Image (cartoon, rainbow, N blue to C red; front, side):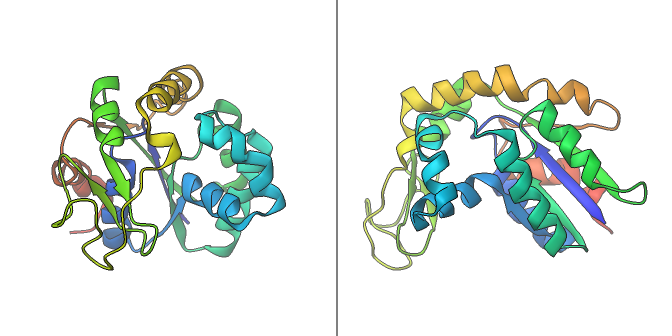
Length: 210
């Protein structure tokens, strides 16, 4: 099984890189943020449990995250790309316990500044109809505030306000940044301040077949 882990603060470009790499590597993408938001939108028991933490920019407990990751790995034995997981040392240890000696693990670290991620995320808008994501500064819709695909009015996610973004960055520095040292052997470092195309180019040669 091929496992690719994307590390980096929120807004560092993990989602953009994950989409490109999944196409090149033909791997399913596990996006923990999407999985949690789907549970919240569905009003499930899990969604109600994590709702306040997600909307405040706090981390969800390790047991819940590991349960979601374990199920995703079980249903994708060919390999997966992990976006936003693991986020803590305990989650990283949990991930290792799920892998065998034959599994091929790669870890990519996107390093981006607080100002970069605040600028990116505070300008992000999402279509509640089709899920398309825009950035009002770097990739705006053709018609202001309206989705190009389905004409639905774009919204800002509750965790994309500047106050919450900066809190998420502080949480990242405290809880997730230590994973850079944990995965130091063979870690692939990428400048998360770069555009998505440049970030992809910097890792494609190491991960993607010619």
